[in-house]
Image 1: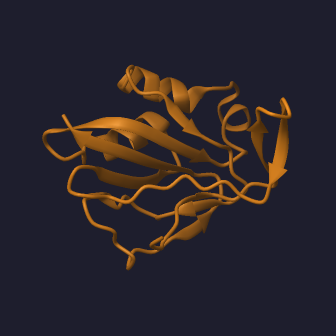
Image 2 (image 1 turned 60 degrees about the vertical axis):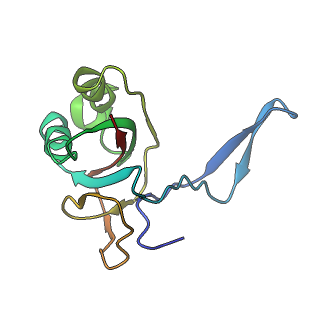
Length: 145
């Protein structure tokens, strides 16, 4: 794998074990993809208005590419604690991109850039990864339309 890594730190992580019919605790969960010439990965963070934050990174989407998936890693203090109700950030994504389902987790320490890294088709290990609080890290996987 190529650093930096983006996402979040969780107090505990679990995976569903179908054979056991239950969740079991695991030390970590890694969801990873590297940019290639056939896909671009955009990573950003936002602290304020989720619609504005999402519109900013979506405006950087390369021409002729469309969003395939979105990963959100919001601080656990966002959501109901920040907005007074649940599902505000996923609802914004559903409004902007109704065909794309977000996935992710609430984090207890979000790992990502302090500003948008934009989209690229090559890994950029020189980019920094900071630990944040009260932000959402968003990663967008885009493919040629």
